[in-house]
Image 1 (cartoon, rainbow, N blue to C red):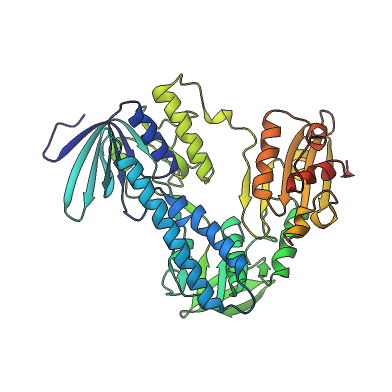
Image 2: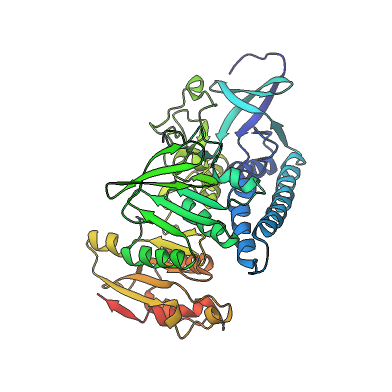
Amino acid sequence: MTAAVENTLWADVVVIGFGKGGKVAAAALGRAGRRVILIERSDQMYGGTCPNVGCVPTKALVHHSGRRRPDDSPQEWFEHAIGEVQALTSTFRAGNYDALNGAEWITVLTGTAHFVDAHTVAVSNGSGEVRVVGETILVNTGSEPVIPGIPGLRESPRTVTNVDLIHTTHLPGRLAVIGGGYLGIEFASIYRRFGTAVTVLEASPRILGREDDDIAAAAAEILAGDGVEVVTGAEVLEIRGEDTVVYRKDGREHSLTVDAILAATGRTPATAELRLENAGVKTTEGGAIEVDEHLRTSQSHIFALGDVNGGPQFTYISLDDSRIVLDQLLGSGQRSTADRIAVPQTLFMSPPLATVGLTEKAARAAGHRVRIGMQRVADIVAMPRAYIVEETRGVMKFVIDAASDEILGAALLSVDAQELINTVALAMRHRITATELRESIYTHPSSTEAFNDVLGTIVRS
């Protein structure tokens, strides 16, 4: 370890980043009597991306956008919604800080961190620098938005990221979304429901390229019905002036004048400021920290959790990362990323699209003989809840192994899909068959009842 210098703190465990995985690990290690120092670079990010600029505020905006009545002023309702969201995130942020900084064995430092050597981290804030020496170090710095190298995009004052949109109270009259993936579609849906004219520019032949054609088509139909213009096969060429998006489609050049341009082409691991080379920590070409199945880096005492390690960018994956690391530090050391089976995900358009496991295309390509259970939500007799809440759009689809009757995958585009998918994932992990799931007893009226119908409606084998 580095020799002691002035303004040096010592810890059993140093956690860089206040995200889900880092804070859960810090709390558990503190309870176990380890002296923990948790470093967060911004006092606006206690708790990490999810409660501050990610899951919580965006899903709150989904909720508020759906409550706007036709006679409500779009700008006034949006400003009201942003105020409600900011109040919510402030509450969560304060709660996260107080819960950890008030713990007996945990200290929270606010400042920008970088490695000095493999055991020493320098933390800088406006008033100076302190060095923190730790026996074990956890890196949980998350990810940050990518702004692609489109000429004029970075320079335009109209360019925003998802983080910027959450912090502005001005509702753009027209929004261009560059990227038709999960992030782009979610924000397109949110802002259209607030009253913004939205155009999504996607370079691929269709949106949601990882999903089966029928599911992607159903989602596109819903977006179109809500008034979102989706332009596929669109190559964005430049941002001309401040507000004109120029793109090429089918060999022809088009232009679109907008009030805001959302760069929604993904997020990249936040490692640039860490000076990982000083610690001998290896990274991938994309900047992610290289880890093994136990989330150890090239330095065995340094672990990387969450988005920064290049895995799936979900809060619940970061949480599971903390379980793996805690098992290494406090448990048997057996848990690993290989244990993850049937991990679900949800796109929060309206209604949400939740998926787990294999698509039909992937299952057939892998050599499975499959049966496909599928119905439009509007046709599911056993699901009156969809009519009760006046949201009958969408479709449910199950991919079932013909030999074993086990569920290989599902795509649920429906009301309550974000909850339903967890039941399906649990069934898959425990190898509950499609027949067992179909013939289970569910409360009424509930969305889960749809399983009684959909799993028995085989549309093709």
